[in-house]
Length: 121
Image (tube, rainbow, N blue to C red; front, side, top):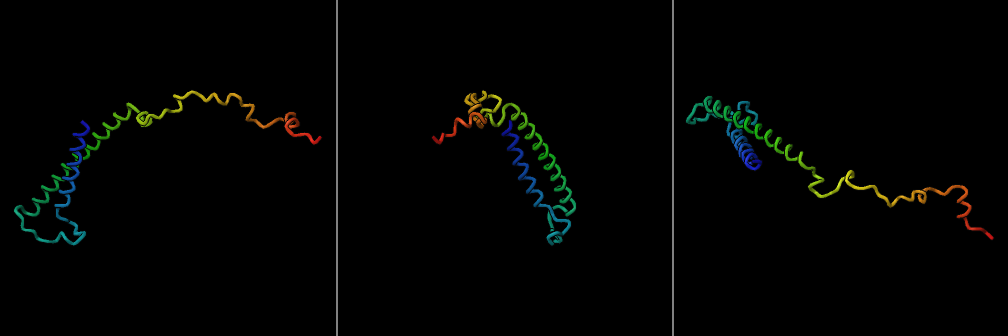
């Protein structure tokens, strides 16, 4: 299902780009829209049809985007990325028992420091 929606999404993206590039520039932003093209349809009818087609492709593109987002969210709720990588989380591991003798890590007390200092006899 996801592959079908993704394929339709990509085809819609290409069609949307193509329809937008075919349209005549009304603002003349690049200076190319002022030509008087003698096409089969009149300029206004062609612009209206391409505008409607653009809207249809855009709405379909948004619907497929939302659909892909929902599919991805449902798929990701099943497992986490860490589960797929095979890495165990901190919750699953047992506490490290190798540090049971915490006393050996503490600095020596005053009475014990005298026994550690070599005598000068």
